[in-house]
Length: 108
Image (cartoon, rainbow, N blue to C red; front, side):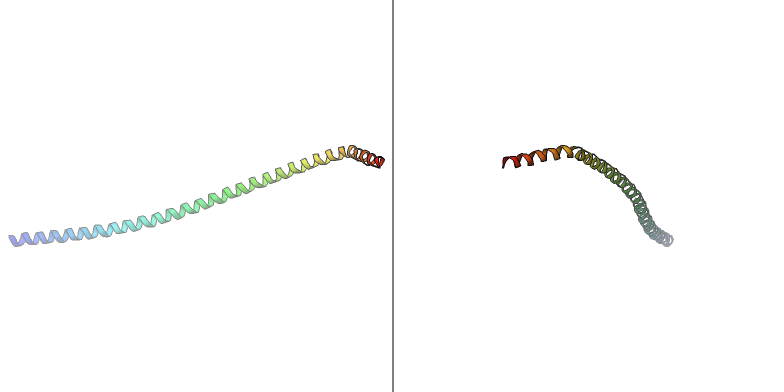
């Protein structure tokens, strides 16, 4: 009976050892699978972030071009107003210059 008990204990130890080895192998497999899934998720997230960044860059460029066009138009309009104001004041300026020149000529 003692021999049978010892054999049963030995068999139980072997079975426990096999169970531990199997559990270790399974945990290593699960860890490797989780790491692979993690790498894939990170790569997918980076890809999606790049797509979104590209879209946002395109929107920002378009907005920049619109602002550039608006500012160019406003600048052109302001230059036109300044030219008109300068043209309107030109006769008066010429008259004032003429008075100064004639006034200085008379003083000589």
